Image (cartoon, rainbow, N blue to C red; front, top):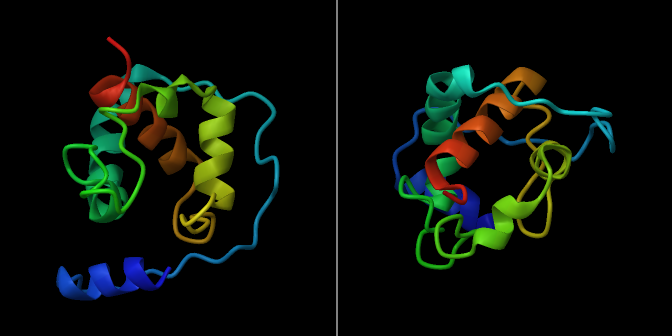
Length: 118
């Protein structure tokens, strides 16, 4: 978390968003990600996720998960990815207080389209 806050500070973000760990442990029974939402997902990814994961999805030199070189990251189901983003996982904080369920779903669609197994 300290690395994330420091990185956000260094990148000059005008608004600091600190997600809480509060939230539903299983936020959805069956997440379906429509591809048409990719442009919105890209906007959310670039605003919230790229700080740690990089615009190119390569994890900013090991700071975070690398979606490009480690294809196993996106081998997870949509539900597993949703819960990882919503509730946090490992060093990644929960984003349930900063993003809506729709935004998280849009990000998953973008991740799959931009960095998923082709």
